Every structure is written in C-alpha cells, then in structure tokens.
Image (cartoon, rainbow, N blue to C red):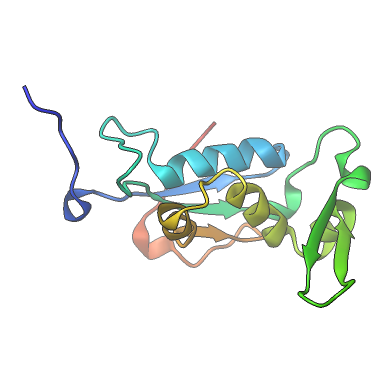
Length: 142
C-alpha cells in the first residue's frame, strides 16, 4: 500500500468564519493557524499547502488575558540607526485590532514559502461585517 500524497490542484479549500468576540486573542489565532495550514484535514502533509481560507470577525472584541494589555509591547525596526519603535498592545488593540490579530496568527505559522502563502488566505475584520458572503463561509465554533 502506498502513501497518499495530495496534489496542489486536487485540494478542496473551504471558507471558515471565526468570531473573536470575548475570546482570548491567542486562542483565536491558534485556531486560525490550524485552519490555514490544513492540520485539521486527514490528508494533511507538512510539505503541501492544503489549508483553507479563514475570516476572523470582531477582532476588536478579542481579549488579552492577565496583564498583557498593559505589559506586552510590539517592536519593529524602521531600518535606520536607532529607530527601534515600540507600541503597547493597549494602543494597538484600540487603533489597529486587525494588525494585532494578524501578528498573532503570523507567529503561529512557519516562516517558509508555504507559511507566507497561507497568510494570504487570512482575512481579518474589526467589526462583524465581512465582504466574503459570496463564498458561503461556514461558522467554526471552537
């Protein structure tokens, strides 16, 4: 008996909606990362891109547990000498909750070409409305 290896054109991709209302940011990001990679499928292979599309709604209503909202910071460097910028997560969640969610998911996806391709299938919205109703996404409870 030979091992089944899925081909790129044979993979069937579904659309899922995750609601982040009153759920921890990390739990939502972990579920999204699992769906994006395709680890929930029986035909999952780590070297084949077999993930699904994920829509995260209500990112602004996601919560950070403990004292992370005040203590956790996001650092990025502009490329110029001495320009290491830092932003507290309390500011980030108020101004750009979509970016905070994307950062959390990005940290749970491998830093490879497959990971970068998987992140293109992630759509994050701060509110409850999204523009992907035509794809008939199914709501995923977790």
